[in-house]
Image (cartoon, rainbow, N blue to C red; front, side, top):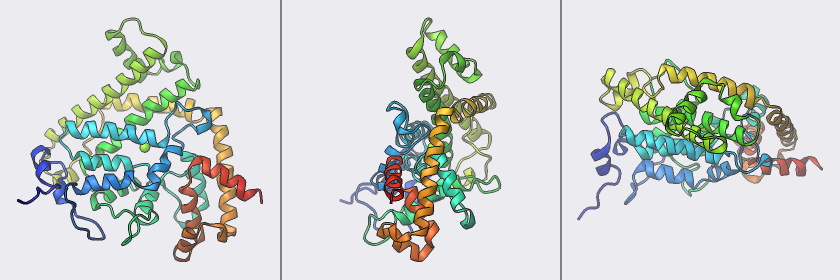
Length: 370
Ligand code: MG
């Protein structure tokens, strides 16, 4: 008896015509035999979860740094929330869940310590060499910097995963549309971060419920909650509104995506590439969310508490960059080896970008004390 092909048989029973079938993957750069009971995208997902860069996400900032408390999201828990929403969307649309999950788990793996504050410093330090971008750094990690296999550098992920991540880095309106699995991960990221950043800011006391209730997206969600539960207040109300915000936006995304799939007669993977963008919210929700994100930008991302940490973290990273660029012999051996091939500045950036927040702070204190 022949074992069933794990990449194909179950896919064909449950995937829509516009979903990417695992059995039709364009494969990996370094050829590998198939696995006895895991499909290719399932293996990709597992490779990402077992990587060092993925584990380090637990000590990397999403918006708020670790010393502010232990309630708020880290880059890892953000990633898991994105993955959870992406899987819900994938299952409801009969897309390839393994592919969507792998893409979601990968999407932020290239973030340096201290979130966008760290990214801005590295981008400035690499200005002469094409800059630094966390989406492209994710590609460097999975193609070059992770070392887990004896035969090749990186994780040797499937073509569709790498292409999906590249699309994130080089969003270009003129380019062919990415797979629908890539589109829903992008949509899931937008739903997840705006909702949980508001929750974290409320928990940290950077905002209060009455202020955020002035913002139309939140107010509408609170009114929906109020129609179901008459007299909620405080934390119970806040959590009910957060739940409603996610549920409402995911429901809206699903309805809109289904409507566009029908309107554009998308009946194959190829048709996704030439159709207009499919996985986006309704005009109403998009506008409300844009306004909500503007509010978060002004009131949360630029809050004095957040900015104070930002300056301190950026200073540590910048000084470490200068120090290591001038004394590359202080780099770990792996990065000294890379230096021969790609130059000092990129190697220093690769090393710094891989650090967690707490390691970066400890290491800057150690290196710069001498
Ligand atoms: Mg993200």
